[in-house]
Length: 432
Ligand SMILES: *[C@@H]1O[C@H](CO)[C@@H](O)[C@H](O)[C@H]1NC(C)=O
Ligand SMILES: *[C@@H]1O[C@H](CO)[C@@H](O)[C@H](O)[C@H]1NC(C)=O
Image (cartoon, rainbow, N blue to C red; front, side):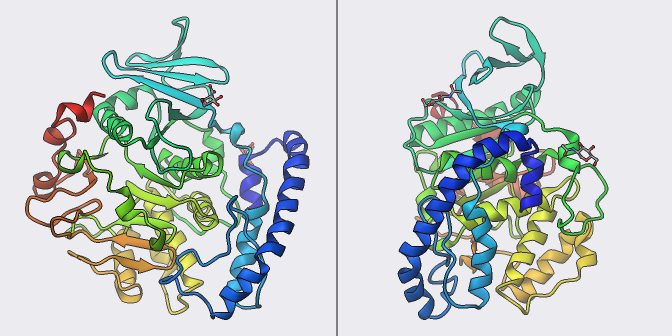
């Protein structure tokens, strides 16, 4: 944790000045929190260890995300110690690699994003990024930005959508996917955050010594902005949940567009992380194209693990390996061959086998939610009038969210979720 934070916040002098106030405040809060929650915790602990089934985030967490460490010396206690580190950290100094101080308005007609940043206004247009006076500054902003859509009408504390683009050209490659999300967010008054830009190569490649082993030597890709950015939004903007959706490959299809089904999936009783089963004939255990995190200390901790353990181009590899590592703490019988998790290609087929054997995960089509420690995987079969999260194996019933690889989707996937027909099937889906 500390090592990673040192990378994200490499400017010690700035850190110290702000830390003086913030750390002091956090420690004070922490101490107050410990005493307030001791009683409650003891009651909870004495009911024996809460299982993830009846209390998915079984950690006493304060409203501000700090965790109170108290209670018996056992596994739960170890977990408290581990997470309490995050609980008392000052809010992150993310300004070194990216800034969350950016408000965005979107002009669909003229295809322009207008970004209000601390350094002034930036315009994202098809030719690149421009200063307000028309000067072209290139395809990416000088420092990566996380911009909030300023006019979706969202309430503070509600759920948030999150999506990532590296720069202007990729934004317009995925433009209809982006506008589909924007109009959905506006229709349902949900927050929308866009990560825009790149970070230093050296920052991505400099892993800390405690990262999980990895022998994928291709460069770490910008897919890893997802955990980094989502964590920052949870920490600083405090939405109740954050849902990452791929910019161009994930969208809200026509059938359910006018309904906000998020509360159906992002519930209190589903833990800290929600994923959806993909098409039953695809051997993928979990992936980050459609993935949601509740605003809890565990979620923020896990997002850092996911980033810390980054390995190669695909962020799934670290997602799986990091999850196995966390689950092992609660499911001691869980075993895997680490050699098979060093590279994406071997892990892809191996991980579902481990999940089938130890986690009760089933390949194919499922109509039941799978509840694992901290994590719920939503089924890919939901009979009408219910709705499936991200894949629906029920006749004409579309899922709530579609995700297909535009370049690789097979015919079966296209039958259900065809971006060529679906992203802007109704005018209100891409005009708002
Ligand atoms: C963005 O909007 C919020 C709310 O209106 C405001 O407090 C904040 O200062 C704005 N940020 C920037 C960089 O303009
Ligand atoms: C990454 O590590 C190299 C070599 O240790 C160092 O020169 C560089 O400053 C580091 N970069 C960051 C962003 O920490």
